Length: 408
Ligand SMILES: Nc1ncnc2c1ncn2[C@@H]1O[C@H](COP(=O)(O)OP(=O)(O)OP(=O)(O)O)[C@@H](O)[C@H]1O
Image (tube, rainbow, N blue to C red; front, side):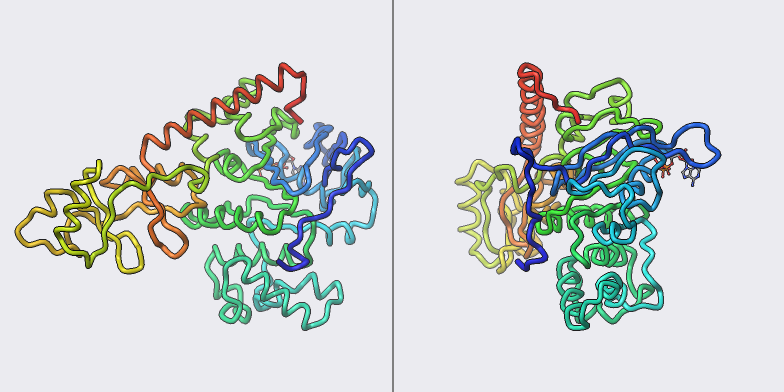
């Protein structure tokens, strides 16, 4: 880990509570000529190192709230504190250097290379060429793009998803403690979007920034947020809590309505494949194993199918007893292809989607190199979904009994 990746130091007050990274105090914005405030007296705290998602219907004031934090929009009244310091009237340029910003229309400079785009802020800060070059390569690695291949390209030579990754790298360039992200995955197709969300979570485990993330997609909020603020008109906070508590204990009919139906299914977005116990007793064999040995393994197991792996341990075919009893059996083509694979960082919701496409009714878990780790079946998914609900309901009840505040 480099020094720039180190989590930010925490400053505690006399009572030992960590100072939130961002604190908004009765923050209000009234646009010129408007009778109603777009953002009305918002008071909230964003804890250090967490992802806080602002979610709410179109026009409720999400973007305005976010842009008040880096003062792209100046507040009409109220105060903004960054790391304990009142920044409401400080130099806005200096403030913005402490806050990375990623938006949907990434705004890369078309005539700058990838390296030049990422290096914009470090250059403004007067870093040496060598330091900028090292940082660009480090960031390209971090967002999963090979520096030697990508640093010299121009934005038009990139896919939408790659441009988005460069946008994130650029916002991280000067290692700001805070990142603001406004619908960063909004304009991207669902498959790339899911991949970028997973990469984003992996990245955050490394960089541990305080991130304010705006979306209107409640599923995205549940998947990405450590905390979610559900906003109604004028950025009024309808509920500010963990995704678990919002799903299990919506504070009002408005929140319930906003979450929509299928709260149990949405809960599956809260669990990762890596956090649950995989079934590892499913029989497996190699494609080049002897047929009698493959048959023996299947017969001696409690399973009705066996998973065939290639020489590098990657799943290839599902075979059952009938497939193995045919007169001439070629293991390379026997049975059905072993599709429906997920990696450990995928959510149980991703796993369930895969399962629905699988003839075996199970998702095959593989590591990053594609080799077999175990299986997830429907029962595991259902048991996990129920236990999330139970844990969260118990937590909420205990918090109420002890009089502790759970909402922000
Ligand atoms: N520059 C402006 N001048 C006047 N009114 C504005 C301006 N920008 C936004 N508004 C109004 O302020 C309110 C909040 O807008 P904002 O863009 O913050 O909402 P949002 O929740 O981010 O919406 P969306 O999800 O559609 O992007 C809206 O009613 C909008 O019309």
